[in-house]
Length: 116
Length: 112
Image 1 (cartoon, chains in turn red, brown):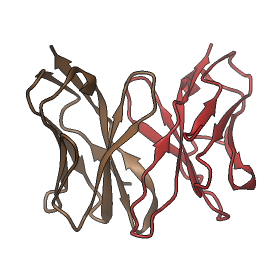
Image 2: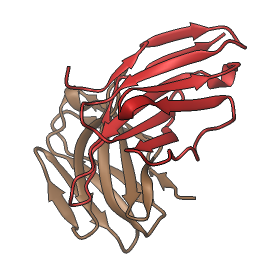
Image 3: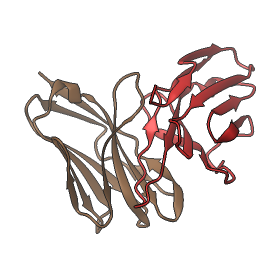
Image 4: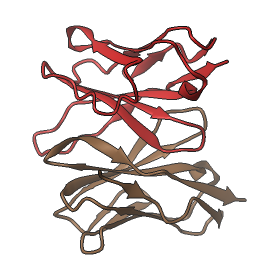
């Protein structure tokens, strides 16, 4: 497929468990973003990867959250010791910044995380 | 930090009418703006973008207006259709910061 793919689409876990969320960006896109969206809310920035540069982790809410991007492609967002307030939709987006500075983000459908 | 907010959380319009969704941004360094549409259960989809060197840009049935003086952005949808019902987000990005900031969204309800 040509779009951003996220898996799983839904994840139900128990409080205290670790979870891994996966994102397959569009092939060739150098930038990858993770956002979090709570019910009825806007998008909260979590982390940003651009090529081989050090990621911008400034949006990660706590040290329980981490993310990797292997080989400049697939990314995994890991949440350790999940809490109920982690319940949200986790959205991944990728882009390939244009020479004119315009950058269109393409989003996946997200992973709905429910922490019981 | 930067903030992007919307004036109206919910907007109801009659099918066939025009819709206007507003957005205020606070960072005068922002120079690129995008409107996204998010349908239930889906990720946001790109609608239209505009750079700060423009005041207006038109797409198919949509127009984005940018007023840099008051840091205001609007999305106009002509002849609104039921399929336009969704949550609309504006997002801003600047040359000196590498990530997009999103507003809280406006829910558009189109009444048949």
